[in-house]
Image (tube, rainbow over all chains, first blue to last red; front, side):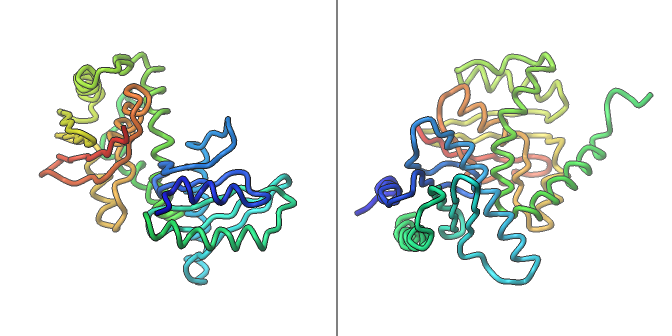
Length: 117
Length: 152
């Protein structure tokens, strides 16, 4: 049976995805597959509050629950999704990665993580 | 000139407003902000000349944290109960009671509990053990139980 680390490593094996982290709502890093030197604890806190504020925007605007959030930066893209009520999956992809594939992989691995968390 | 010490209820009111706004902005993820604040609280206490929280012995930390929090007027008593992967912290005579109870009445978890933030930071920085708040419950008037999960 797959564990969290294996699922995250499978994500980083996808072309263009360099980092995949699974964090609790409290910012606790449950597991990560990241490039050496990445500050995963800081990433955990930012991912949690980033997704939390995106959810709050949706709530205020009455557009329902958030399914996936994507932020495009000059040098990369971050895709985040909630895993159940208490966890979040986030991946960091290169700016030229295939966004359709990245989003699809996140959706697929979300289900895998929900099954074990 | 304003008095050196500000009113406890006034402080609770300010913290309540800040934390409620934070919860409205980021929902349950507000706990992640508190997790980030813990190490800074320790740093700021150190900058005030309040030391004794640099030990890596849990019993010394318990004793020193108890002395410091009483000295600062944060609570009357604090004690630790460690068992395997669990650390239970009993806080009595909590000065932030109105803050956490006010949040609870709004359906907001007590994520702003400063004792919990400090305890997590101490576990991670001093004991080298990753820690996570499992739950915070009341144990009577002005008394709380902070239950941490230790990831050894």
